[in-house]
Length: 251
Ligand code: 13P
Image 1 (tube, rainbow, N blue to C red):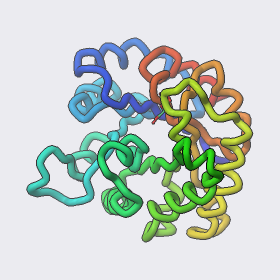
Image 2: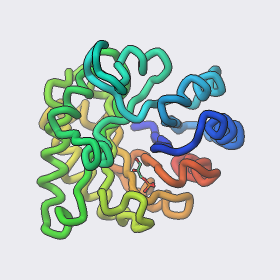
Image 3: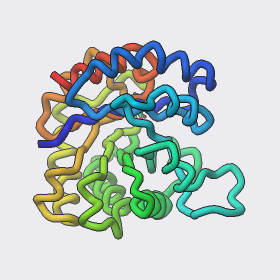
Image 4: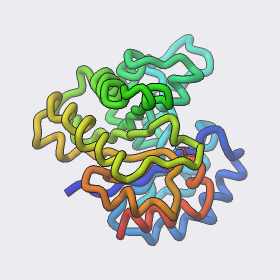
């Protein structure tokens, strides 16, 4: 059985002071939710402050991206060892990184391999754009992105992978996918790729999250699907609604 996984991607929101405040307000509610892996991913500058607040709790910390090089002249970037010191998780290949910062399947793969090397659990994002969806390319795009991101991942690291299916058209739009569509992509596209890469037994262990306009009100529809193992939450993770989503994952 896969343990449900709920992660909050704060994106470029909250100052350090605001991050502390938000963790303080929702921390008790989140801690009370049992049987769910709960993760918060604030901006880099708040990681240390949030790490200090989460110490000794069962709430995990994640970064929103990471470079693949060990160190050196890469102004503005953050290295795997720096992430590892504070975080158990890292979001990689988010569609906003692909769309605005030129990330490709190849650079996402380099980051995933760097996460593997440093034993950081990657939350690998895939998902089609509205145009790709409308022209019937969803399966092809999601398959290509998943295969591309996971090239060279070892079978013994694979069970700790987390994949997030985030259709770009559903992100921040309030137009969530249906539960049925998420189940279809998870069960008929992503899981079969994982079977191809790692074999059926390992593929069954890998969590596949849905992301895109998840709220406390619609979360149960997703979590009732057999291949939806949790959620990657944007906007609603900045509010108490995130606790309601975690509660829905526990139910
Ligand atoms: P929203 O929940 O705001 O749609 O964002 C989803 C997302 O991109 C999480 O990574």
